Image (tube, rainbow, N blue to C red; front, side, top):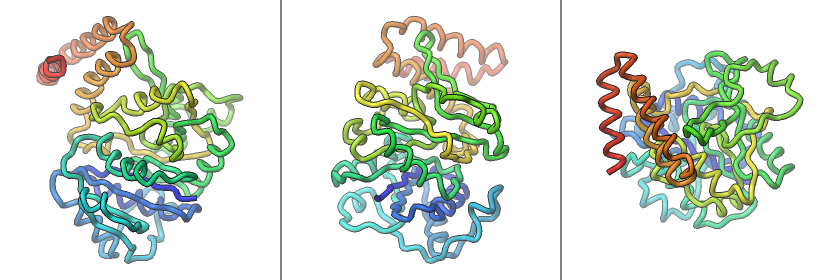
Length: 328
């Protein structure tokens, strides 16, 4: 059964080729990998093409056993525009798509998801995977095995481990607190031994967005990701679409080593994280949590005020400007 792996690249081809090396070493061989490049120029596209031809190598990895030796090159691949991708009638192991515009994580994934919906295939799976990750060979195999055992599962998540400290959990998913509209990562900082000691799974409201797995049947029910969420809250919104029919969980034997933050650009992640976590905190509440909208606004004001207390005056004023623009 085919698994389509969707990877979004944004000015970070170094991590993307490391991720691709690990994905193509998967025990599950019926793979179609699609990389959507959201970068403002063609540097990443050129580097990814060089890698596929065998003219560029991964420099180093903290997981050499998952990345090296590198897969055989040249790798059969397409390099397409969005328009060419939609009209293409054939597939190759790797397809690299240059997005017209950077409209965010959801929009980039939707480029590929739209075509999956148009093809209307059954019995296939989609794996949304951040580019700043590395996966063991059995991750995809275990995802398929587990989700087939639990047909009530809609969106399934993985156990994210810290790339720089692989014995520590980064997240197994998140929980949403409606009163202030805040999210929290579940089991963050817990050791792998601590995970094994748990007698039962911890309840999550949504899977970690860095690695989400679903069947094409579930995709038809959920539809596309909401592109109004440029960054953050799109996975929680996706879960909400199917909560009357499906459950959400994580699988504790499906590991993903995640760097975190690199997928949105290391120099911009702090401000972007602030901006979109605040804006989408409000936007999500307006759609799904109107009962507590007043306290969500209060929480946002407190979050911005903390930036001023931390003497981050420019950041605080920028966030106020972003807030006002979002409200108009």
